[in-house]
Image (cartoon, rainbow, N blue to C red; front, side, top):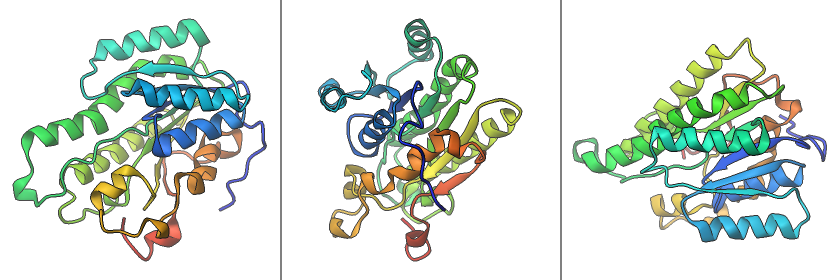
Length: 253
């Protein structure tokens, strides 16, 4: 599929990206800003967010905003307060990219640790639920709002030893589908992306012996991320789109 958009496809839009300090989140923030969006960088490491902020500034893109937040410990009130701040500063929100996530342990089902499971579900599912609830009033003010979740191939088909992460991604896809169905008669489009095997720190921790030179970089898969936020992507709704469909036929990542 052709994911091309106009150079100013996101001009005037405000988009929040979670996990924006590095990897796919950082690349998405840079590409959204390059296409004219004002991006809100959310993450737990201020220094990383500041580095992305500075890079956006140095390229002359619209000035970004920073929201330091650890989603593992954040409460419902934290998200409501964040929504109030965004509303006061920007008036509305046009896009939300749920990119942040925890891998947890790669382990047999019988050995899934309860504390680790709770952490993964907190960040990958509950935090995204609470954040989306808090931000929906702002997204509904947008004439062309977008919510994009992040899934995985193991969110389509359960895979041995992928434990908490796989369970959380099945939940993510279910949450996306429910929300998409509820919002089908609104101006908001809701989808998910399966990035596939991508050169990130999470991927390296899961496959430490893998040759990273064989993997796509976050930059390689950005056309889909921009497309789903842009007017050109409006026809897609309630879908999980594979960023690397050709690879997923050969190798379940």
